[in-house]
Image (cartoon, rainbow, N blue to C red; front, side):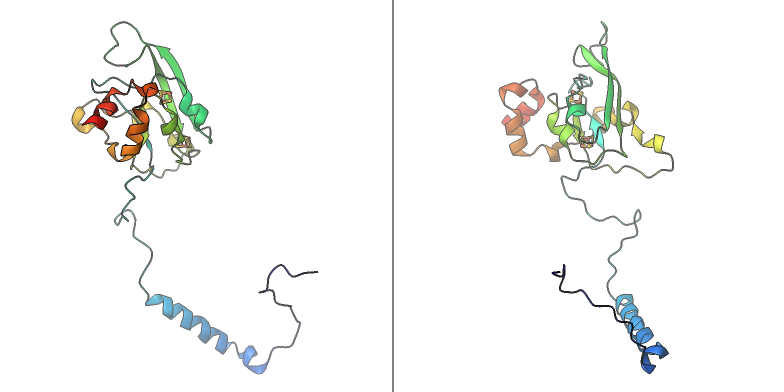
Amino acid sequence: MQALTTRAKVAVNKKMTFMERLYLPAIIGGMRITLHHFFKKKVTVCYPEEMRPFSPVYRGYHVLKRDENGAERCTACGLCALACPAEAITMTAAERKPGEENLYREEKYASVYEINMLRCIFCGLCEEACPKEAIFLTDRIVHTDYKRSLFVYGKDKLVEPADKDKRIDVSKRQTKSVLEFKSQPGFAHNTLYTKALKA
Ligand code: SF4
Ligand code: SF4
């Protein structure tokens, strides 16, 4: 039968030599490797005190955006949940009541919107699927915890603050080619971003 690898060694049941039975050469060899690594530059970082620089388009946990007037952009269409390969997104749709126009941009909104961060693989497909520019991945890191239930992020963690100064900046994810793509007539409702492209 053809060998699967050229590195295969045939095991032989031979007696150990005197030097092998001393174990000293093997111990010295092991110590030499340990000492070599001991004085090498460390590749580990002391997170969280020390942080490596992130990629400008690092995909951390999501933000649900508000429009320029502070209303939630999400219309609970469910496209993000449909696009999600990990089935991490669930939501409940509700109808906007008269007087809530300042809270929700469209007649329908997500009264419950949850992402299970243990399921999420941070692929960004939800962001691409969203026709309302409502969901973006950010550079925020999902924090560790001991309970699985705490990794189900609801609107309290996902929707950005209404205060304009505290909004989550997603401009790094709005590259020129993305803006061009989203300026197509099918995305005409994204006036904020169409304006940004023209500027
Ligand atoms: S980033 Fe990917 S896996 Fe995570 S919620 Fe969005 S579509 Fe699902
Ligand atoms: S985030 Fe976007 S795709 Fe997902 S339900 Fe809301 S509007 Fe639809």
